[in-house]
Length: 165
Ligand SMILES: Nc1nc(=O)n([C@H]2C[C@H](O)[C@@H](COP(=O)(O)O)O2)cc1CO
Ligand SMILES: [Zn+2]
Image (cartoon, rainbow, N blue to C red; front, side, top):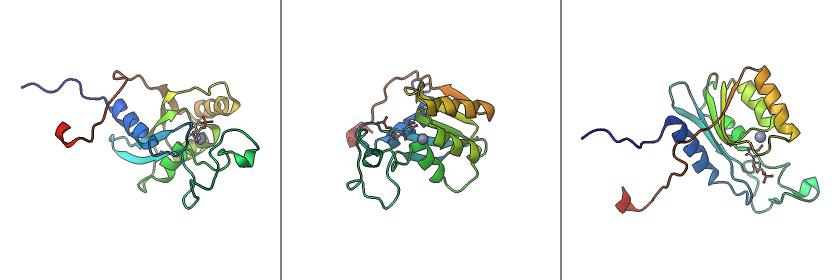
């Protein structure tokens, strides 16, 4: 018997972990996940967008509109920052970060400071907003590679049915 052919690529695997992590998000509008990988293709940090530890998901707002303090924006911790902070306790120098959404300027600063060397993203839907223009300016100047993920497999299904294993 020859080897299975339609196995997922490393990019699909790590972005898949990022997307699965995003499924934990309580944000009703946008669920983002991120996955950090070292030079040996080992996962060293995972995160999703959520409120800081100890802050109730039920007591803080999730809305996008209204006065700033009544929206989610001042409180939510982005997936990329969570993945960096949740790392397994190692230097992230030379690691890659897979993120569903292109990083904002605040996460970009944390990415740069942590030593991450490459950003792989699925969507750059906010590209025209100043925050993301600033991100690109900083990433370019810092010599950090950026690339949009090209998936061969557009969808991957998971089953928790024991008969499917
Ligand atoms: N790169 C990102 N990582 C993230 O974790 N987020 C989070 C913050 C918010 O919870 C949500 C974006 O809000 P909105 O697209 O519904 O308005 O995604 C957002 C971005 C985009 O900068
Ligand atoms: Zn961010």
